Image 1 (cartoon, rainbow, N blue to C red):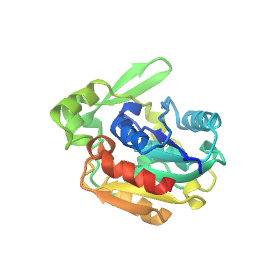
Image 2 (cartoon, rainbow, N blue to C red):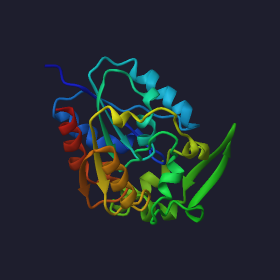
Image 3 (cartoon, rainbow, N blue to C red):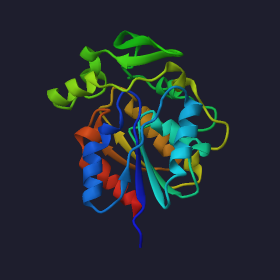
Image 4 (spheres, one colour):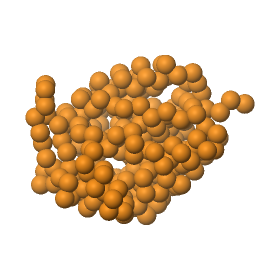
Length: 231
C-alpha cells in the first residue's frame, strides 16, 4: 500500500522550518513529506493558496497544521478530496463564522497582546512580529536559548487581517478524522481553548507539557501523532 503524503503547514511567526525535526522523523519512518509556505497576507488568500498547492499532489494526503494554519485547514475550500485526515498541532480549530482572534480571546492566558508585538508597515498593508525579547516567554519558553534566538530573528510575520478571516461552510473537521496535540504550557493559544476546540471537533487528543513551539521542542510527540493519523 502506498504511504500517504504528509503535508505540514506552518502557522504565524514561524516558517516551514519549524517542522524540520518532525519532518526528519517522518521521512526516516518512510513517509513522503512536504511543508509549504503560506503567504499570510490575508485568510482567503491562504485558503486559495493551500487548495492550489494540494491540487498539485497525488493522494492520499494527511494534512497537519500548526497554530494559525489550523484555521486554514479547517476551511472546506482549502482541501482537496485526497485529504484523508487532519492533525492540529497546538492549533486553532474554528467552525463556520469563527475567527482566530475571537477564539484566542475566548479563554484567558494568551500573551499575544499588543505590548508584546511589533507592527511594521509593508507594501500593501502591515505585518506583525513578536518582540524579540518576548519571543521565549510567548512562543518558545521551553526551547533552548539558541533556538529561541534563531526563531526570534527569522520570524514569518503575518498581516493582522489574517486573524479576522473566517469561512462560511461547515468546517472540514466535521467530515474528516482529526487529531489534536494540545500544549499545556502554551502562552500563545491558551490550553483551555485548545482543549475546548478539540473536544468540540471530536479530535483524538494528545497532551504534552510544552510551549507553542511544540514541533521544535517535542518533535517525537508530534511525529508519532501524525503517523497515527496516517495509519
